[in-house]
Length: 239
Ligand code: URA
Image (cartoon, rainbow, N blue to C red; front, side, top):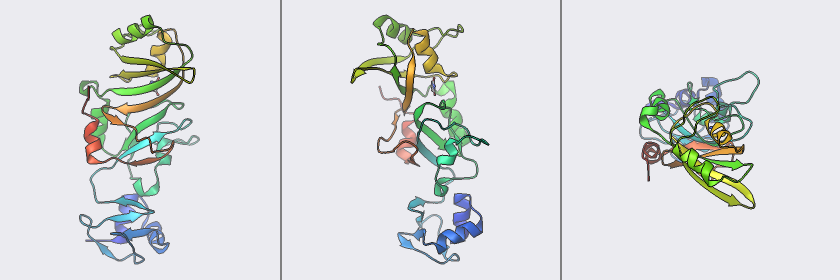
């Protein structure tokens, strides 16, 4: 059993004083009932503690799905620019959260934030072949011969040869799009692949990591914890 203020301070990366203030403000509930006593004892394993409506239980690690908005940088901290970690609400924030991989500042969509270094390594490491799917808004239609070059493994302007990609071109409201799935994560890779195919990416959104699909009920800038089942989907490739 642990004191409520101590549990909140630990899990939300807050000082004891800040945790006590949240309790006093009526922002904390235990098993669905508001608790106003900081010294209330709670069972970390069995009780559900919610802060500002976000429930947490005592877990070793936290896994968060973020719908990254444009204009925010994929870093843990920056003196001038807003980072993806700044978007995580206090109840989900832990001491050592970091993003798994990197999306460009102007890229939107699925980003996993965690404090689990092993998981991050597994997602990023080429040997685990975790494939990522993006939707690119293109300046021009994607011609069949260029699509084939992407599918066969296109050579970038600097001579780097990419692994074969899966590509589906489509048109919507008169605009040209491509859904592209790749198993690598080179710098600006998708943009450089389409540039090598004579096209230009106007905007880019990541929609899938492995078989984990971005929850379309999350608005840009919103996040939520992943379920255990969803975590498993990252490493499960559905054909
Ligand atoms: N490829 C890019 O070019 N940019 C991203 O943000 C991700 C993949």
